[in-house]
Image (cartoon, rainbow, N blue to C red; front, side, top):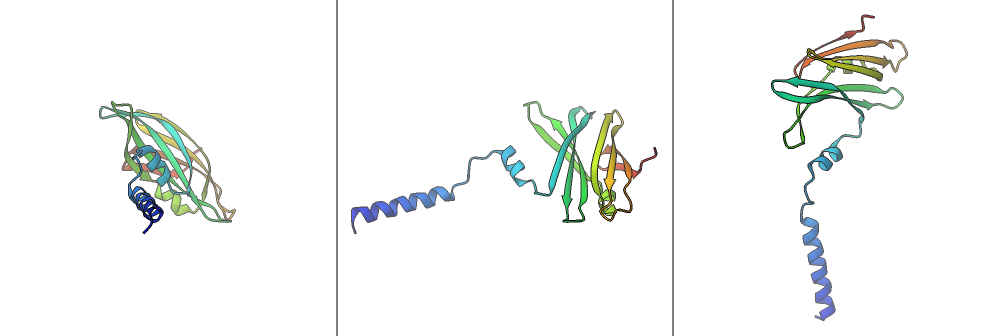
Length: 150
């Protein structure tokens, strides 16, 4: 066996060993990379202060479909940490919206001491039930959703 063959074999072995090592951990990058492609929109929707924690609400909209696009809406509670980071405390899907089979055209939000209020404009992909809805979120497990009253 020649020196060149041994050297080439060693280079291949080192390359395979390096490929098997995990990449340097970066939780933010890994989390962003793991977001499904269906997530098309993410917005900070206001701030909260509850049980000694301070943070913000984040609303995510996922969309699927070709000609008939429908949306799912999620609300997250993200709390600031003492070290400058942030942690997701809870995520809630507004399943009532998903069951309508509509797309979210736009939304506005306002946070106060009682929770988060969201005004949602929708588009029916069938063209028959464009409507506005109100969402009131009180906790990661409690909300009220229905047609807008105004």
